[in-house]
Length: 489
Image (cartoon, rainbow, N blue to C red; front, side):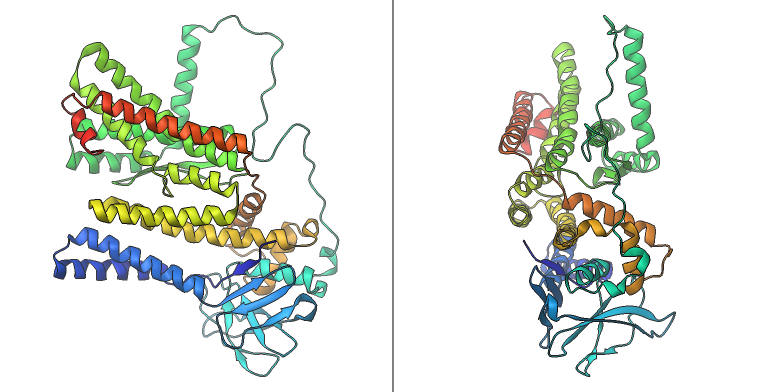
């Protein structure tokens, strides 16, 4: 079983990115490079530096055999049976003292950790060997403590009321995690659906979609696009983004996921946000490809209107809508194509999925630099930030899988363990942390796709991309549509 790696919580991320962007812009002015492109390059370089520091810095590695602390000279190294556990409180300049846990090996080398939850650092503490030890801020400190409790073992850390395993909720027969149960079939089938019924159902779908979207941000996006392009082009762009993102929303709801909303971001498009994690890689692929499928089918409407009327404007709209969906199919996270590739690769192994994600980001940066596409740098920057979150989730998921008696720990146990090394019970951040833990557990149990499913989604991806390319090529001779086609040349 793969070990779980616990790293310190990243601090000063936004100031570092802003500083990198400002430095890049200044270098761009001196070197004659467009300031916006240079700023994106500087921000991306800062993100890479932060990532390297996180990967190579102080970290605790927990495996089936024991625990090691790497990244410093006097790192702890012990089998689980040799780990000694203690708890304490350390003062800080402002506010209440910080609760922490401290671990030591047979030689007395110690490692103290806590969940600071954004609070300022506390004073160093004394290790078992007498040396001062910094209290390391671990975002997943409760998960590391859970591993120590079960593997050292250190059951004394729990009160008597939490020593018994929690009751397991029952699962109704015929249901699967993350998949909405099929609706019950009626005994009678209607022979046909009237035209008014179709309109009513379509109207209900549109109203539901409008409730999901953030109309304020949509209006801001329309105004921003209208300043650069014509108001007609701005409305056409927003309409495609709306249909595309609602394809994701529909897929999320159909598979039982809770949807937070659909958000428009000026000059960056739109995004559908869910409250849940994917319960399977099939679900991840389905949600990822649903947006381009909906957007591509919708692009056939203006294409058909052009065939019917011969109006070049319809051909231009269809071609640009196809380009938008083609861009989203680029296999770079966080684009839809990148999320699909992640689902396919993670079905083989998490290491392969992570490797392909890194290669995709590197390839995007190389292509963007060669062709002078500054937008690719921004996509790569967002992908790098998402990659850091994915790496954190992988560590948490591995920690949960390393628990020898996972059934003994429920939400109350993790709440208590968090209070032992972090904020007290009932703190404002507790509810958000528990939601994150629930997402983590669901992601850790995400079922991989079968070889047949992998092949099916791969074929669907290739067919969709090929169809969009064919549509752009078919309309390339029409004035207006030829501008979109030139982006592919």
